Length: 454
Ligand SMILES: [Zn+2]
Ligand SMILES: [Zn+2]
Image (tube, rainbow, N blue to C red; front, side):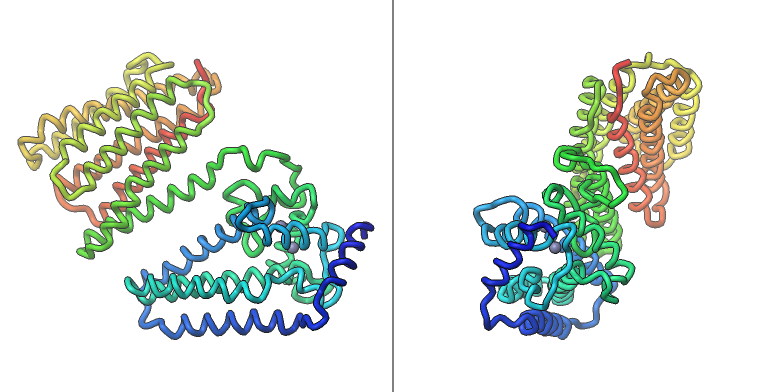
């Protein structure tokens, strides 16, 4: 053991109050936590399947809270949490270092567990949240607060297990032994501000790019500056799922769910806009046209979503969006460079319009026809561009393929929308239309990445 760790341990132990009882400390936290869980559990009454969704959502929120508090308050000095910083970086990380992770006597639990009053403080906050949420839905309130409390207990238990002696049977359980390895890396003084902040499940570490296993080479300094496409992808997926779920439940006549749809639908497109905004690229012109197209699509989303008759405004916004996408896609590839995609895309669009013509309201016939022509042009140009770059392999191949996939998915999404709206309602139409739409937008936005000037 390094001398200074040994000296710190002696100093720390000498400072522990003689009446301190580790068994009372740990026992109180567990018993008090179990009591709170029981109180929340008791209020549950006939939980609906959708209400159970609260549990995974609260687990994700707890995982983020654990990550955020540990990283930003435990490892960076902050005025509001000076005591936590001192206890964590000052005491805990001086007491336990990579080579010396195990505690030696029960007295040492004092430097592992949070102070006993913290769970009382935390639970008071949760009871306030429970009371507020219970005004809307009692089951959601109890499931949410119960899960957040279970998260706290799991943190205490896992963290204690991560400092158990190697030979302890609990330390050899599969998941715990994995988290112990990650936590040992976190206890390296030179890495503690960079990696492995999750204690129970490394979800946020994975999303934020701060997960570091034993076998990987070190990526020093990259954790804070790199963009976080995984996080953005998961957030977009969650928002898109919320928009789809809200639309499905709204169509089933359950009106409060429309709020879920109204919040998540533009949110998902905003997140895609952020992906486009932060993408590393050497082609600023391509990006700026793509950005304009995504902003116009966002406007179109809002027009089509509101319960007002704004179909023409929505159609117009998307029409302008496609013109922007066409401008982006024509920057490095001559407009109409390959005739075959044109024949295919315009032919496909014309066939759909022809089949839907009898049921199209007469006032919409001309605007829809123009829209279909512009959309088919966008798809055709994206395909032609992917074809050109695929043949030359100038480093744009995969980016052009993503854009072409986006163009085709956009055509698919609008075909489904048109048949649902102007022919007959499709089963679960919101799922197919929105899923293909968001996939299309994601592909178009991610085509900005790695795009080089031709
Ligand atoms: Zn630790
Ligand atoms: Zn730490």
